[in-house]
Length: 364
Ligand SMILES: Nc1nc2c(ncn2[C@@H]2O[C@H](COP(=O)(O)OP(=O)(O)OP(=O)(O)O)[C@@H](O)[C@H]2O)c(=O)[nH]1
Image 1 (tube, helix red, strand yellow):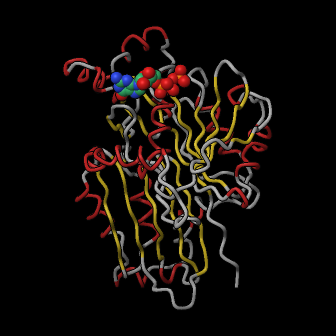
Image 2 (tube, rainbow, N blue to C red; image 1 turned 90 degrees about the vertical axis):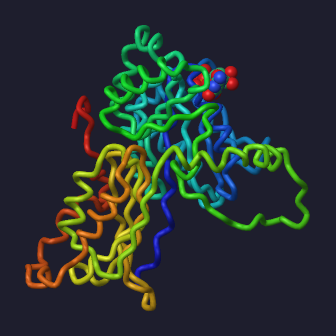
């Protein structure tokens, strides 16, 4: 039997103009990470080098990644070297966040990530942080902000506490027009639900007994008050089915999914179309990937998906998914070729990256 693959580590790109609140958001994630081990690459503009990697929970321990500026890294092999270090099994990371310098072209980073042939990573999304109070001014000085928004998978409209109600309305409208329907989450001080970006990992702390309350624990305690309303910023849909999914209909659903649907995670059972494998599904923004894995002998054959987004019609999406289940009539339709649509999104062994729908200004 094929051994189960090691889970791939999502790599999230955190971008946004100078002072928009990227570091604040990153700190929020680090303080609310629960058991998740987050590796951070800070691409600090000014020092022109990858400063350090900070693994949350090992506050103070930093690993130098050597010299080089991520946004100036001309070839993907340079980025690959950084990622190679971070994804070593001994480092045991669950997620990697790259904080791009305020002046970096985020699309370049995304391009390099998608081109990476590191089998231990997967694209985790481009998050663009926007300063709601300064957006209109920033846009005059840096019209390229529209281009950045157009390729974002998730927009965090930050500093909403600093914007007037009328100002916020105008910014909402302008951002929505630029980001082409991508999910927009409003926040102050970057307080978004970490689950939007990655799956929380709950693992017991190795040395829990002897552990003292850390500064991080205290921060987590104070941040806890915000927990309840963080969820209000987005909606999630949980779907589960014991009847196999029809691959053609599921692909039609996925190909036409609304932009506000930021993440999809879970796995699908395609029944007789591929009885041997379950298909783990990851989608973030326009990126979609299936990873087939053999079912274990006693594993119940079912489909379980969670969809996360903002401005989505949760009930309608649930119904649409229910309509993707196999029907008795499907059994008479030829199965051959029915998986073709799905296989377009399975990672090619050559490292060819399928499944990222190019943005309007992206050269294929
Ligand atoms: N009022 C308000 N201030 C915020 C908010 N988020 C961040 N700030 C403040 O804005 C300033 C800039 O935030 P940073 O997180 O450093 O921004 P950044 O995008 O990392 O900045 P660069 O690294 O310079 O690109 C800091 O003083 C933050 O405390 C917010 O939602 N509301």
